[in-house]
Length: 332
Image 1 (cartoon, rainbow, N blue to C red):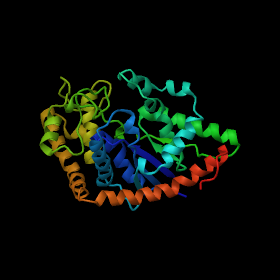
Image 2 (image 1 turned 180 degrees about the vertical axis):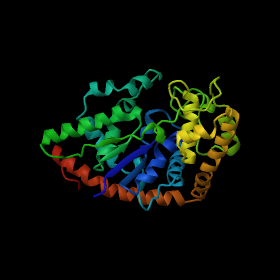
Image 3 (image 1 turned 45 degrees about the vertical axis):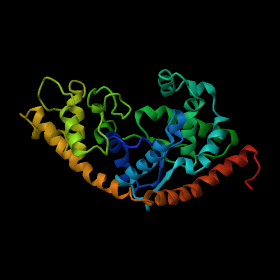
Image 4 (image 1 turned 30 degrees about the vertical axis):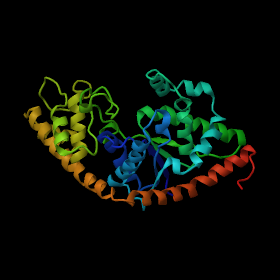
């Protein structure tokens, strides 16, 4: 039987090339090797205040980007988290199995709580909702970034704790799937190569979104930081900024880092950046065209309604099983 994969992306409206190369493009490959569930995790977005109209459009745009990037909704299950109520229901049941100390130790919670004037309970219990997302589907593999590994460990701990309590496998214990750095597992900021590329960064020049127009992409690449050596070679320790640009080039072209080094031997950064910008524009062009096709009225809504029906059919048996084990009455 195929392995089952679950992964979710928050609805930010437009994802970065880091999201694309590090996650979504890998999803498009995984869907032909595994039984895949890809979710727009809109409930996770509610840990901070959201404008309702903007959030609704961002949810749909994130789903459009999933499909425009190569995820086939006929092959994979693409859906919105809040349209499958089992996620919220299981989250509460799992909260009753989670220790408050576990949640307070989460590095992401401590980092985000330190930046906010008001800290909600949702921010604290975020990892439990993530655990519910994963455990509902008998998930084998979860594509996660380094910053989410600790959350996945809570998911694994909860599954093991519950299985031990009932002396049987209620929940499958998932494993992480982390792409290697050279496969785009971590695209860094264009202005600070010590930071992961993120749309939440204050400087918009630090990231490129999948929907940025060609002129803006070229401008951002040409203004990306490099170093004073003026030599194109891959060395994360000594040349992190140039190495990051080389990884982006490799992911767009399919060429190895060694081949890129040889190709641009003796060339300055100007020529390399110019050709990288053109390459990235052409890489994103088909995705942007497909996105606009999916923006026609009713198209994405129909896809998501079908995906929600399929997700409910897969999730509810697991929820009902756990409710029964806890002693709750059968679902009427």
